Image (cartoon, rainbow, N blue to C red; front, side, top):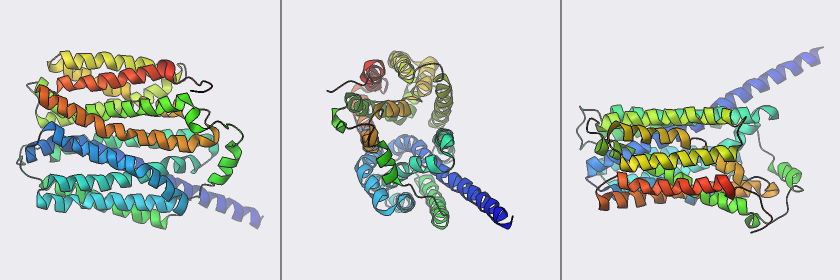
Amino acid sequence: MPTMIRSDESQSSTAVNMRFAFILVTSLFFLWGFAYGLLDSLNKHFQDIFQITKLRSAWLQAAYFGGYFLMALPAGFIMKLFGYKRGILIGLSLYAIGAFFFYPSAQWHSFNAFLIALFILACGLCCLETAANPYVTVLGPRHGAAFRINLAQSFNGVGSFLGPFLASQLFFKPSAPNSSLQSVQYTYLVIAIVVFCIACLFYFTPLPEINEEVQLHQEAHIHSRPLFQNRHFILGVVAQFFYVGAQVGIAAFFINYVIENWQKASSSLAAILLGVSLILFTVGRFMGTLLMKWIAAEKLLTVYAIINMLLCMMVISLHGEIAVLALMIIFFFESIMFPTIFALGVRNLGKHTRQGGSFIIMSIVGGALSPLLMGWIADHQHSTAEAFVVPFICFLVVAYYGYSGHRIRQQI
């Protein structure tokens, strides 16, 4: 009997530890969602402060997603060499260093220094994303892995829409002069402190190890074809590149578009509308997941991409409240695209699944390039609306992938 009691107490203690570890890992999803939510508001804020063009301000997105691209493979190597817990600590450290570097960047009044700070911060976020998904899947019973990862990802959406709401109050408040960087300076200083505290919690919290060798042994028999002979995987990388380009480009110039096409809108109101749009994104992710119980994922992806193509046409050709509403609804229909393309792209890869997933994550570099192209078009056409031809083309590529490109074929 005493042995059974000790066993029950041990199981109870393990459950508590797992629950606390899950809460900590879920906080990572919120952290990178929040960082991304602030990013698009910074775009417009820095245009006003530094008096720079839209093309120049788009280098914020280039630095952010360029950091993701360059850090993706090193992050995977770090996880393999040092383990996931140390990888998370390295990611949080880079995140805190990047956020703290916003303080001297504001003191120097240097846009280039902000780009360096954002690049360092993004390298940290890349490490966190590389680690968080596999950790969530092992923090509890195997049959609940899908529920845990969807629950954790929902907090990514929460962070994404809280960012613009905070920016509307801090960066664009009427009492703050347009030339002031103080609000940015102290916002990111607080973020750095919070991230450092979370890193301390991770340091003192025991986390389960992931035995990837066993997983690879179990999957080795499933598939033997070389990774790059899988047409659906290669097209998945391409589709993800274009999708992320559309998502980031739309959000980056959201505030510019609203101000230019709706006379009643201010920067503060536009930032609030961006936050509402990201709420629609989060709601769309939940509803899309529910719809996939009855509708095949690839069909839903195709329909959503076509709807967004039509909405982009409205954004380009219309003005006023209707055009802004069309722009906001795009967020709802793009919500399922990243995870759906990812899932379709890694199907039937067997032992190559993790490597294939790394390449699909790397394809988010599209988020670094699309805003630059949109900024160039907006500056030369003197209209942000004209730049939305870029996401229109991106959604066309996504629609093709959902309709045909996802199909698994013999060889390319």
